Amino acid sequence: MRLWHESLLPFLPRQQLLGQHRECCALRGNGWGKSHATVNYVFDHSPYTLFLYHLEVMTEMKRRGYQPAMTWRNSLYRGKNCPPYSILAAVTPTKPIYPEHNAAYLKECQENLANKQIFI
Image (cartoon, rainbow, N blue to C red; front, top):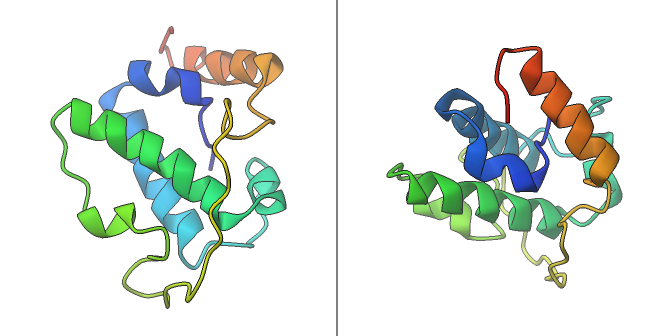
């Protein structure tokens, strides 16, 4: 499980982009708070921050002609098997959305992709 550096989203191959959508859906739903070494930093932030990142993923999907379910554009929505948030305070978007997505993380993501023979 990994959230790719947001600057890579426009360049991810189809499989990685759609996989990123599935990861976001899982994390926003019943996966929220479940420990996983690669994405534990996500839980140090508001769930709204993940929503903002997921919006970026869905925007790129839409740009490429995919149609993610509109329900995911609601910040309170957590999937069919998870009750929605009753309230979720918005946070001001930052660039990058996650401060952990720094230059070192970008390099780590690029190396991970290169190991899959994907060069960005």
